[in-house]
Image (cartoon, rainbow, N blue to C red):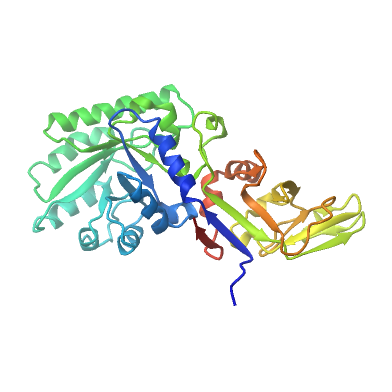
Length: 374
C-alpha cells in the first residue's frame, strides 16, 4: 500500500538552479559563488541541495559545523566545504583534515593551536581567516592583522586560502557598510604586502550581492537568496527569485459552525457568521509559527484563507467559508505558489506577519515533514 503523507515539503531543484543563475547574473566579473547549505540547507536538505549545486557548477559550499561538513562528504559531495563557525577550542583537528574541510579561523588561541597541530601534516591545512570589520561577532579585530601575519610567517602546515568578513547590515547601502568595505580592503592589502595571496576573498552575502558590488571580490556567499527569499522585502524587485520550497498539507476534515462560536485555544477567534472551517494536520511542532495565529494565510483552491484561532502543536484551522466544494483530502498550501499567476504565500510574507525573518521560517520546518525533490 502506498503511503499518503499528511504534509510534504516539495523542493523544486529547477527553481534552485534558476536562483543560482539569477544571482550569478549580478556578480562582478571573476567572482565565484559559495552556496550556504548550513542548517540542513535552510531546511531544504543539505545533501540533496548540495548535489544539485555541485551539478550546476557551484564554486564552494558553506556549512556551520564540522559535523555538517562530514555529512556532506558522507553524502558524496566533493566540492570545497567551508566550516563557517570554525573550529572550537575543544574540537579535534583530525576530522577536518580527514574529510578535507576548510575551517574559518577568527581567534588567536585556535590559530596558535592549528599552527602547532599541523606541523607534522603531510599537506597544509587550508583555512580562511575572518576579520570583524563592524559586525561585532566573529573575527579578528582589524588591529590584530599585523600579529596574525606574524603568527603565520613560516608556517608550512597552514595555507591561507581565504580572507573574509561579514556585513552587519546588507539590506540597504549606507556609509557604515562602505566603511566596513574600506576596513576590509586595508586588511587585504596588509596580507598581500606580507606575501600572502589568498585565492578566495569574500564579504558579500545575499543582500550585499545587490547593494555592494564593490565587495564581490573573488567570491560571494549566497544563502537565503538561493532558496527564493530576499533578506528584505525592499530587494524583491532587484533580483528575480523563485521559492524553492512548497509546503503542502492535506485537509483532514471540515466542520460548519454558527456565528458566535469560539475556536481553538484561548478563544481568540470567534465566528462572526455561519462559518466553514478546514482542519489541517500541521502545527508548531512541524515548524509552522504559532505567531501566525489569526494572522497567517494558506491557499486552498487558489484562494487565500485566514488562520482561524491559535496555531496548535499539531493543527491549524483555516476559514474556508464560501468555498463550498472544499473537502477532506484537498490540498492546503502553507508556503509556496498556487496554480494562478501571482497567488502565493512566500516565506517573506510569513516572516513579516510572524515578526521574524524568512531564514527562521525555512530553517524551522521540521524533519517530521517529508521532503520530496523534483
